[in-house]
Image 1 (cartoon, helix red, strand yellow):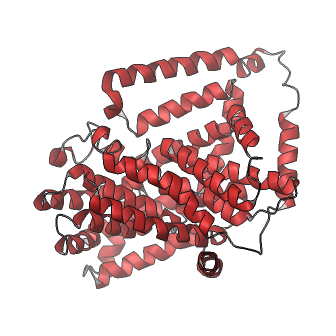
Image 2 (cartoon, rainbow, N blue to C red; image 1 turned 120 degrees about the vertical axis):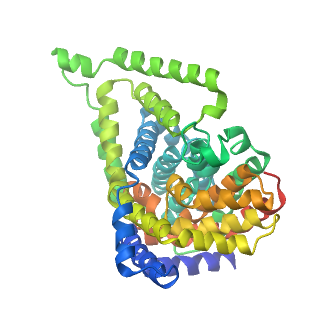
Image 3 (tube, rainbow, N blue to C red; image 1 turned 180 degrees about the vertical axis):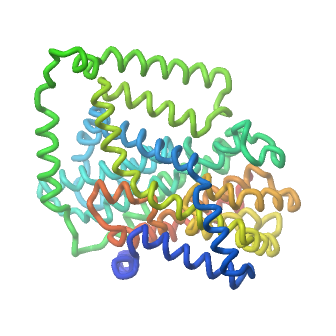
Length: 450
């Protein structure tokens, strides 16, 4: 029955899920009309909200691009790729492949969402390739969908935007809620249960909807592409007769700057502890790790150049989502939605309704930090009135934000680019995992203390 459920969702997604950019445009239209019909704004007011918000996420966009690029660079480094290749031959069938890819994507997603996204994509491709070469039929779309599961656990991990933002001294809600340390959010008992639970359960949910037949294997063209890339990487090092070439290929330069960076990171955490964890220090650490793992400056330059191809969707679509945020916030739509959930809430149900409302808002604002900027002020204002801890409210918003990434294809852009699939090929499967996870997270936020 579960396999038929997965098949039905997959057929639906292939028929109805558009390119992520089309999704952004359609959501823009929907938000525009909701602002007129529900929030009673005029068409001209909605256009003004849209235009006023269009460039409000430039700084945050850069942070997100860096997370993706630095995570990609680490994931594509020779040591990491060697590790992925060594474990890619472990699965003996397609179901084992789905679970292993999903587990590793979730594990690395808890460390860094950009790393998890790229590791998931590269590992899914490598596992499917190894299966093809060994004559094992593997269902490539579901394996790739499993590689996307890191985006359903990331906000409870070490790169979670909202918990890291409120842990900074300069966050925009400091006057209302103060500085909330990561120990109260990311390392709370509730988050440990939710995040560790999803680490094991999300891949299991993907395995349960595995089709019994009609496997779609990886394209032989991708295998040939990898063969050519490996042949290019094995070519001799460039001529080092010039000073410029020697500097570009100097491992010493990389080691000096990389080790210096990691020394600073160690000093930073000895001074501030994990309460000092934020987006900037996470990006800094991954940048320095990438420099070290690629061993020479020019190799890291090339890795970053390759990784930058994966942020084209962020660059194109983030302004549109900032415009949607502008309409949601300027028109009062977010407040209307949040107030509705608050009105029907009790101290017990408020975290659940916060989680559900955040799941809905994430479809319109697929950005952890951006969503917190829009929805956070409303939710934290109501939480004290109902006696709900601010830290639990923050994590409930975070869980909603990450859950519907499985339906909102925005962050899958880089993964789809690496695996050469379309959003419609995987969204049906990720939606199935999302529905199972919705029940698990909902129970957790209802019964567990913050």
